Amino acid sequence: MRALIRPSIVLIGIVVCLAAVPVTAQTADDLFSIDTIHDLRLFINSRDLQQLRQRFDENIYYAADLQWRNVRVRNVAVRSRGFGSRNSTKLGLRVDMNRFSSNQRFVGLSSLVLDNVWHDPSLMRERLGMAMFKRMGQPASRVAFARLYINSVYQGLYAIVEPVDAQFVLRTLGSSDGYLFQYKWTRYYFGEYLGDDLAPYKEMFEAETHRLAADTILYSPIRDLFREVNQAYDAQWREAVERYLDLEQLVSYVAVETFLSESDGIAGVGGMANFFLHRPAGSTRHRVLPWDRDRAFEQIDLPIFARTEQNVVLQRALAFPDLRAKYLDVLENCARAAAEDGWLAQEVDTVTRLITAAAHEDVRKQFSSEEFDAQVLFLREFAARRPAFVASEVAKARAAAELVPRHRVQ
Image (cartoon, rainbow, N blue to C red; front, side):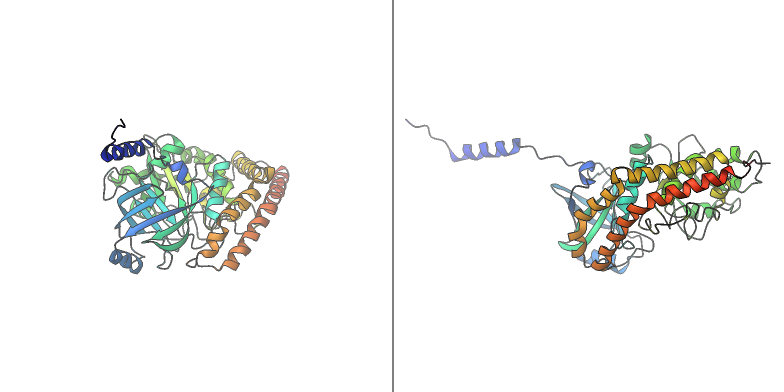
C-alpha cells in the first residue's frame, strides 16, 4: 500500500531545503573588488530626489534605501558631496548608514562615498592614485567602480570610495581612538601661521572624530604645529616641529603625490588641498592621509620639486639633507615600483578593460567618450614615460647635491 504524502508536508520540506542553502555573505572586500563593475541602487522618495538635485550645493540629508546584490539597507542618509564637482546632472553622493538608524552598517561600513569623478575625463585617476599610495606603503582608501541607479534610472559610472573615517584609521593604522581631521579648502594656504585664535584652523580642519570635544583639545595642536613651522629657522626648529608633525612621513607622502603629478595636493597649484590629518590619542603629532586623486596624472614631465618652495613646511623640511634624501629615495622607489613588471601600465589596462563600455554608456559624465579614449592613451603614455623621467630627475638632484656644501641650520 502506497504511503500518502500530504502536500503540506512536501511544501514544508521544500521550504526547509531552501532555508538550508546559505546566502553568500557579502563583505567590504567584495564591494571594493576591482574584478567587476558593481550595480548599486538607491531608492529615494521622488520629491526628495527633486530637492536633492535642486539643492545639490547644500549638505541636506535625505532618507533612502541602498541595495547591492542580496544586501539591502533601509533608511540610510544620502546627501550631495564634493567641492567643485557638485552638480545636478551627475550627483556626487555620500551615504551614511547610521545617521537615521543608529549602529546600522552596510557590509561593515558606516558610510560610503559615491564619487561622480566629474573632473576626470578618464574616470580612473582615483583608483590608480590610491593604488599607487597603497603600493608605496601609505594608508589609502579602497576604490572600486559601480553603475549607479536611482529609482531604477541609470546615473552613470561612479567610483565607490572608502571614506577616511574611524573605521579606515582602524583598518590602516590599527587604532581608531585618535583625532581625525579633513582639510577643507577655504583659501590659498601654504602653511603660514594664522595667529593664536583657533577659529581659522577650525574652519580649515573639520573634525571627523571626537566632534564634541572642546576646541582647545581638537585644534590647539594644529595651531601649535603651524606656529612652530613659522618660528625662526634655527637649531631647535626641527625638534619643535617634530612634536606636532611626522616630517619624514610628510616628505614621503609628498614624494608619492609628486610622482603622480598631483596638481591638487599638499603642494597644489591652489595651495594645500585634499588630505586628512590624523593624531593618535595622547599625542600631539600628526601624519597626513590621502584623499581625492581626481587631479593626479596631470603632467608627464612635472619637475620633482614643483611648488615645494611655495609651501612653508615643505620648503623648510626639504632643506635638511636627510629629509631631502628621503624625498628623493621615495621618488626613486615610486619610479621603480611603477615600472617594475609594467605595474602601472598593467593597472591602466586592467581598469580600461573593465570600465570602457560603462564609461561610453555614461551620458551624464562631463566629458565625451572621445575625451575618455584620449585620456586612456595619455595615461598609458604616463605609465610608460613618467618613471624614467622621475628617475633621471632624482639622479640629477643627487649629483647637484654633491657639488654644494651640506646644509646646516645656524
